[in-house]
Length: 263
Length: 279
Image 1 (cartoon, rainbow over the protein chains, first blue to last red):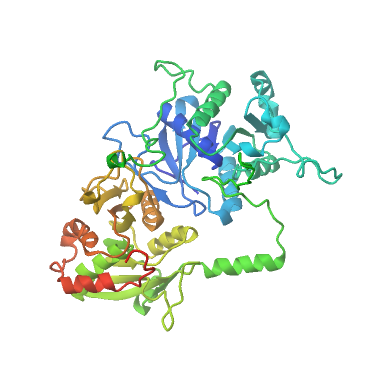
Image 2 (image 1 turned 90 degrees about the horizontal axis):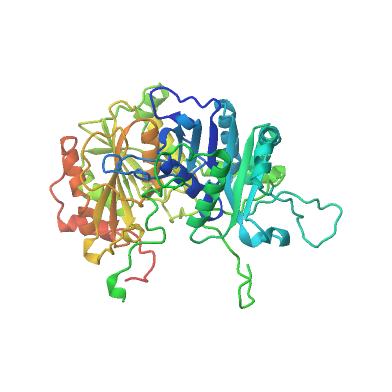
């Protein structure tokens, strides 16, 4: 699944992996774009899989004419070695019938690469929140047991709310209906979390309740929360500090320019 | 989702389809799913000579592979290149999906995806694809085709039709600018593309993207020339837009002198009229 784009395969041991789930509003993917663009990360390989819809385009993070014409694929891995950070960006929807297989491929790759922890950036339909979720911060987290041991203190300090388990049929009192984890609109998030618990992988999910629309503010919110935990921007010398760089591909997100004759 | 007027709308996400919880399937469901998957498999059917060569472990010796995706691209190759009758049809891909139409008396797959090889220069391979290849079949098509072809020194050129409505640009394009070409190429492609590179935030999808992905990952030199046209069906002006690409490939194969209008109009008329909405 992972194919290196360089002469020698990259080493991921003890790196932190950040990856998005293709979810409502594409918030995770937008947040990952900000990370790659701001930290100027370099591509080290491709996830060559039949589980994603094919697409191709020029370099979405290009800053000059020289690097503009570089082909990019639907799923690629970038690293910032000095931060021991690796990022997987997914740019295309997962083929519906292959989502389980995609999760399996991901889990195998994460295990084989030796990442110290994985953070999945995701989102969930805001309209499906229940009464208690409507109040307070729209940010939620989930953590597998094996990561909880290591990060419990940090998470407590950040004051984040854990994703609640909600009853399947609210209002119906039925002894069989246990509250369960539900992440509507989250794509493979729930499945990936469950698989990671089963495989004892250190994995965390960071998600935001949101709706479809202009999700750029959501992406900023999510990536700032992530930064509060992982401190990705601390080493940046660029001023102003804590400023995320928007990639050049974030243009015309809502269509082409308007014909002047329209007015 | 409830709106202000009391109606309930079903909300959808542009990113995700609602994922089915892992439904426990019974055996019958599983069998149906397996059979459907099998029916959707891409099958390559080669001529006996090539099949024998492949089964004995020798891949097709190929220096140039030209792929045309879409009616205009395919008709362009037919009119400007294949009409010289120096080409043998050496194989086809059979692809079945929800959009395959059964045409009475003829298998619709017959002419939809055909491979041709040059008689005098058998290392030049052309493929015309006019059928729809579904999202779950694209990767498979690219894998299976490139598995048959040797990669060393291979140059891939893809001609692809697209609608100008899909082209995003800041300055509104007036109708006089279409049709035009834009290119994308893999890192291994060291030549000069014949037209401007595809600007952000535009992307390529479908079969050309699947081919580019495969070539990028396997370090094969490949270039896609996407023609953005404002005409839906086959059109001679759109076809002519591809000419610079073949002039470049001229050393590999001879371009037929620009075909006569009779030849061109044959290709323009030959497709079924899908609907009479725009006549």
